[in-house]
Image (cartoon, rainbow over all chains, first blue to last red; front, side):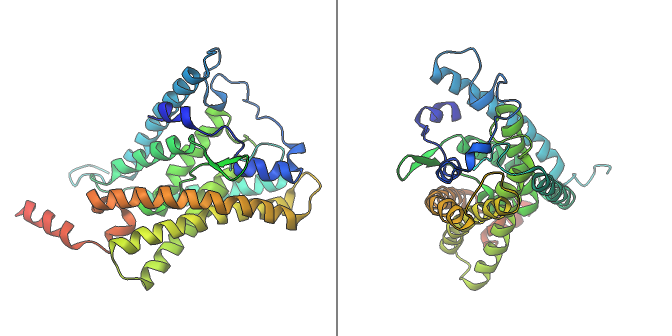
Length: 85
Length: 229
């Protein structure tokens, strides 16, 4: 789903980027140490097609967050009454 | 809203990381075992939902865009403590895996988009619901209102942090006006998405909404009792 919607995502700078650029604050900003990583900016390195790259990046993101989210699930759920704590 | 590295100096970044770590520890402690088997799956789903929506930038005004932050939504759907875990997962993975938001700015981003937004949302939601009739309409209206304020609070936190440790030459008054101005518009987007989402879940499974459970318990309890009987 996210991969699908990412086609329609605005590519304009976001509010904070825009405001910091307007105020000249972005001159000190530096790229993240992992800005060249395989999944930087929700794309997949090596895939030329922007849409496909964004789609796959989004899908991988959903999967990764889903796995981490499952961790939250096991943390916050009440143990069943029979469970040993 | 994701801050890159280098915008704010090291001492303020480290301070923010320490505060964020403290809040996450409190979130971990207070949320352990708090949701039952019906509501616990929602925690993971909310993380996925917010991550997906954060990737979708909606255009606001000329030449700029915004995206859902989700602190208000998470706080109302799963409660503030679980919401801290949800936002921590989302914002950390964005920085670590997708290079969205700087690594040294992670503490600042966790503080602004997660903790500040969640704390403001939870307090304001509880306060407004005390004053208003306990109906579905007020819950949706309050959720939307809380969403706008939560975005402004995150933006305000950024301006405050910048005033403490900004690396460039700046005029704090004009930074404030510029950052807050654009975030009023983004806040309206946040309010629409938050209000619609809370409204849709209230219409189908009101018992799943943490913020509503206290106020709309009647029919839910009835169903549970009849099932048990």
